[in-house]
Length: 292
Image (cartoon, rainbow, N blue to C red; front, side, top):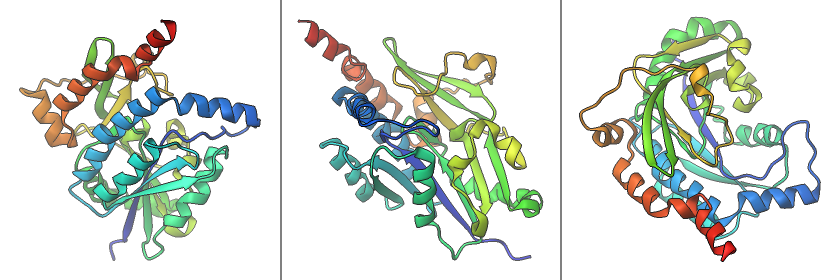
C-alpha cells in the first residue's frame, strides 16, 4: 500500500476583528471591536506572545514540511502590521494573510484555507494555534508518524483526529510567569485533524470540543505536546479548567532548559520581559496615566 502524501497546514488568527457566526455586527460594533483589539498595550502584549512563544516553536520543528498561516485584518495599524509581516522573513513556512475586516470568522477561513491547499497531496492535516499557544518541536513529525496507525479509521470516511492530551498552561499575572502541567482532552493547541484532500473542509468547521462527535479520534498521552496561555486577555475561560482536567507528575531539574529543548522557547527571556513590561501589557500603566 502506497503511503499517502500529507500536507500539514496550520492557522493562527491574530487580533482579527471579525463577527461570530449567527451575530451581525453594525459598523459601530466593528469600530468598537477595533478599538478594543487594536489598543496599543494589547497589541504589544499579543506581539510579545507571538514572537516569544508561537514563532519559536514553529521555527524549531524537526520536520520543516509544513505551512503556517497568520490571518490579520486589513486595517491592523503600524507598527504592529509591519512587525507581523517581517516575521515571514524569519520563518520560511510562514504566510501572513491579510483579509477584509468584519467577516464571519468561519466563512472567511473556509475561503482562505482552500487557497493554500496542495492538491498534489492526498491528505491535508490541519491544526490551529492562538498566539499564546505553542507545540513541541516534534509536533509535525510525530503527527505524521502516528497517522500511519490512524489510517484504518481514516479510510472509512476520509477524516480522523489526533488529540495530544498532555501539555502545560503558561500563566502570566501580577505575580509573574508560571508553568503548570495539565492533561485535558480536545484542547485546540493539542489537536491535528486529517482529511482527504478532495473533500476537506476548514478545520474551523469542527468545534474542537466536539471533534469526537464528527470523526474517529485517537488520544496520545505519551509526552507533553502543547502549551496553552492563560492571562488577562484570554478569549477562552480557563478559570474552571480544574473541573475538566488533571495534572501529571512533572519536575524537571532545569525547567528553562526543558522548555527550550521541548518547545524552542527562551523561558528566562520571556520571564524577564514580562516582569519589565507587565503593567503596560495589562493596561495598568495606561490606566494610571489616564487617572493622573
